Length: 344
Image 1 (cartoon, rainbow, N blue to C red):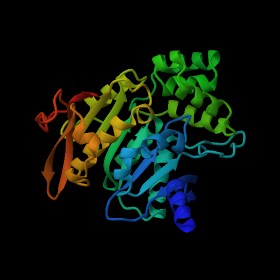
Image 2: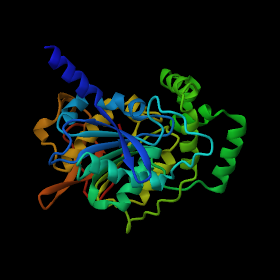
Image 3: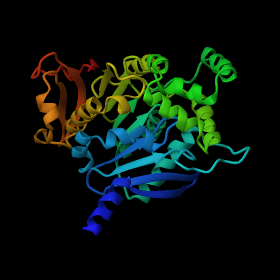
């Protein structure tokens, strides 16, 4: 019994690894068996977070276990951002967004993973996008939360400079992570992030990532030159990056893109609305052909207002086309040629 309990605890905590890449060491946590015939789920967190603070709420959510038990899960921490990481010395040259993206193939090789379904938030979504554009055969699907594909303009740059004078680093990052409503209400989630960031032993590392994210380049995607895999864009209806996500959606291939705009989700829907995001994620991977409809949970079947996924067969693989939300369960899904905005 003790051995069984120990094994369960180990599985829950995951196997942590420090992986040497051509661009430096990166920390990654593996849950599951490693190499399988299915793609692994690969996550990448936002600035001011690590893989635990960004994704634990979602991937430990009860309904998500149905997915987790069937997939290998890899959480990557961007360099120096993992919990308890040592502070980099003064003058350390922190890797660019492009360089961090170039570390990911080494991580996949280390775990003997051939393909992934990427789940990224904010800076993590941007980095996973760079990785996908450079390695299209390695990515079978993308879930991009709070994606901003544009470089910062001069006005944004000037505003950031002013903010850096009038606001602490912690407050700057909080306004990146959370909606104005959440900041004004000073929710428990905002306060817990404030405490964790301001007291972090690796605060200098967080600042380096923050500066490099704000120096990012345009992703340069359009409908003729975009991701080759199905993509689900997710953003809260009051989130700081709502307009950026809408702009990204306008540049995507509508036949392979789903746009999920969540009501009452704030800036971190994976933390505040794990039930809704789990359900949408299930439809997304079901559309890719990896979860049979019989696997759908009571949550999905019992909701009067349901998400429905429209997808078409592409050889033996289904490709997710669009998520919609009807006012009544059983509504016919929209045409696969549409990308619909979803409030749920």
